[in-house]
Image (cartoon, rainbow, N blue to C red; front, side, top):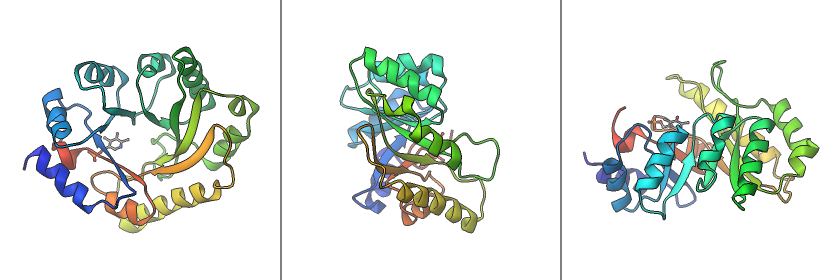
Length: 219
Ligand SMILES: *Cc1c(COP(=O)(O)O)cnc(C)c1O
């Protein structure tokens, strides 16, 4: 199957309100261009250096999403162009994004990553940390970032009930924050679902799916 065909097949199954992030990490530029030529404009990468290299080589109407864990000292390399940062999980990181965005005269959209999986290894905020972050004066004063939603990754398991429970949990945290709409916090996006579980994620309320291997093949 071609990348173009994979992409069209997946797109035909997605409801209109769901954004497809084509996760192109580790794949070469010609593969990404095949998706681009089939109409795809939103790409997700998990390493800043790799994203910068691809951004330099590819057409400039692409929206680049950083979906991986972000190291504070590397934020500055992507702030000139990144469209959405999915994995924000600390005030410290948010402060650095705000600072670098300000230097670039930009307001950068971010998602807060919430820890929904059973595994300890996955990054993300728990609910207490989330509340503390949103309530902090430091956050409220930030003018160059905007929190536009939440992101989560389910446990790596075949147990559909468990995955469903975790996705539903993220959606309920999102719903619980709807009253909190401020200048730099406008929650509208729930980023959840990958190749193996995106249909379930959409059924649980996802508005943004991050799909890699089903489009580009295994890594
Ligand atoms: C790699 C990755 C994906 C895509 O995974 P696939 O199973 O290839 O679809 C989605 N989200 C994140 C955070 C990833 O790192």
